[in-house]
Length: 61
Image (cartoon, rainbow, N blue to C red; front, side, top):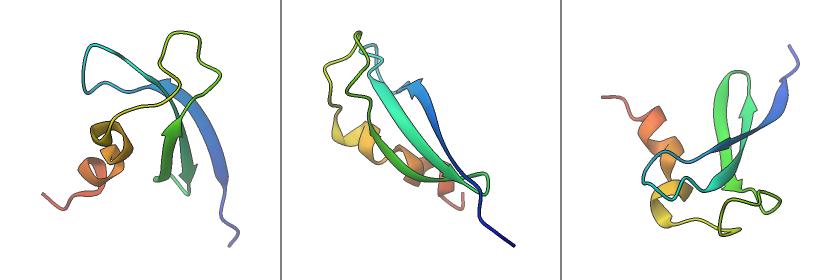
């Protein structure tokens, strides 16, 4: 079976800054979260909480 990969443009919900992010999804799993540098409403980067958000989603608890 071939893996299906897509990039979703959304925003980080950790704080009120709502930084723009690009989420790479493969087979319905988050594989990468990066800053959306084209988003005009964010700082073109984001904090450590946003960079590690996929760990929260994938945590076994």
